[in-house]
Image 1: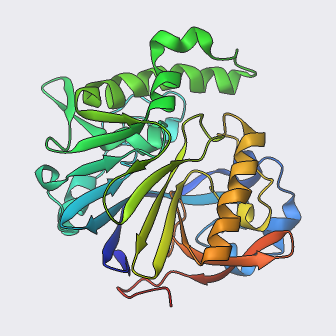
Image 2: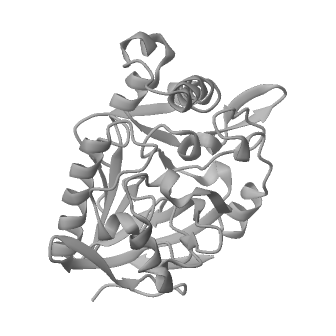
Length: 310
């Protein structure tokens, strides 16, 4: 388990799946080959496999222990799910519940589940299949879901969304209906649909960060003199730290996502916030600094428990 602390908040990374997903420039379409090749020394092997030119990533949940409560940030893909939009994860079967147990987390002990946004790989373990029905995995938790995303992805509002621009986007659109049905709708009776901003406790708060999805959000942690921001899918790859204008192929509004990304990175660099993306493998989190109009990684999070920030 990769773990560290942010002041008095303990953080543990629990990996559900890790591996190659797709060609690098399918995932980050505007990125030129040079930005990957010139940074091979540190992109490989955690974030890019140069032999296959393939994007490498992790799907994971961040466990936060704060003020006596257990908070989960995103819940991965989940088992037993029909995922036609991404065959790699169709009917996935992992031992993720056992990995949570190894991290000292039992489902009934979880107090809060945060979904940074509604995409299949962030809401999957919201539920599990029992006797043919999708039921909440964390029966005593409050699920925090951005209201903007809940409205956007609610099948009853599908007619309000712009027409798909490609066959790939059409498949994603159809897949999102399935995701909503098996991973979102079954927990709505115990969900808090938040807008504007939301404070979880004295250390943790949520803020909108739109573009990847309309309701995409970040989780800010502040304890003592330490700061961190869990950015969800604002970042898929470290090349987007080097060039924030590059959005992923999964962004609903690439232009807005790039604007949000730059804003979040500027604040992180200026305030020494640890940046914690949803899908970075390896250490999974980094301190960044400004590099002209771009940014660079100044230090990766350690893989042992320690206080990371001065």
